[in-house]
Picture 1 (cartoon, rainbow, N blue to C red):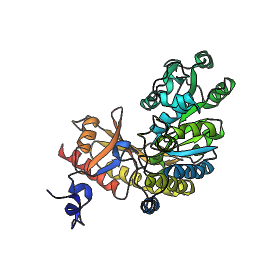
Picture 2: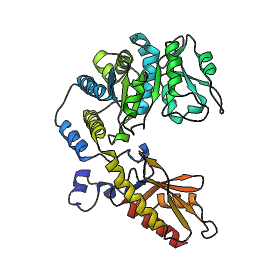
Picture 3: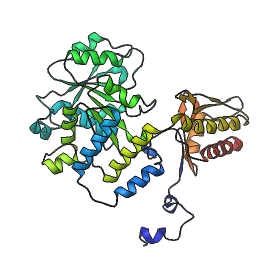
Picture 4: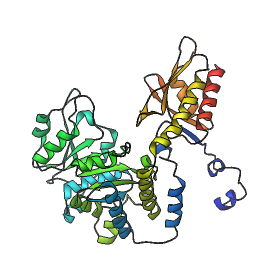
Length: 385
């Protein structure tokens, strides 16, 4: 049996993935965790490689890098987390325990503590599961039609640890962020914002803190940082309480903290802050124009196929970067769902979205040549039938 080192020697024309029998994915869907999140830019990879050359005190690294991030985002304090989900775990932990180390070591057993986090029914997501990991109980308010200020205020009591808000909000019938902040301040309850993917326009990286949020979580993959990293920023005392419950608090302070398993490499921390600084200084209109040209070309080519109608749909910062592909069922004898599955099962594996029987293709995660791969794959499906 060969070791990996010897297996990879001499295979300069093949990717490491191919040698392992792993198909490349053409990502026409989103920054999915399941697909690795993002493709790291050269500047970020260079920083990661440099960080790999030296050992550092991880507590000091999280502190100093956190100060750097806080300054970039206009927050009192911040630190790099092992993803936005981990950020929510630590944020809810901090709101329940504050700086009480005895309570930190009790988690997830929260009986008798402030352990309730209020959440609007209209702003639920699978990711709010994170807040229950350390023992918080989610108190759902409102219904499918609406949530009112009265609903929210009636739910606040002595057991309330925080109010959750899923950014950007705006769903029909939900309480807007400005009102949530006002209610929370009136009752002296902290607000946790899940802003995982809210990285454009750039003001989104600062506005929730500026508007009065106490803790805000972001995912690094959305600003072309590591898939396995994120940021928690906000009020100094709550960020400090959250940081104590990480792996560095466990190792350096002797706290048997619930966040011990949410460990980071020094390389990930450095990669995250370099990616964030790069993202904040980037010309995003120029970047998105490149993706716009790719999606326009893809639409033009797909419209040459019989039974296919492709049209530009979604945009970012006013620049269209995604397309809807509609199959004419009177001409084609297969459904969009079948096409999506067929593409995914190919080699390379092509991932695209599906919405109400419409194929959705996003160029946001395209690398050079992806548009050609998707066109080729779709032509192959259409022409086979």
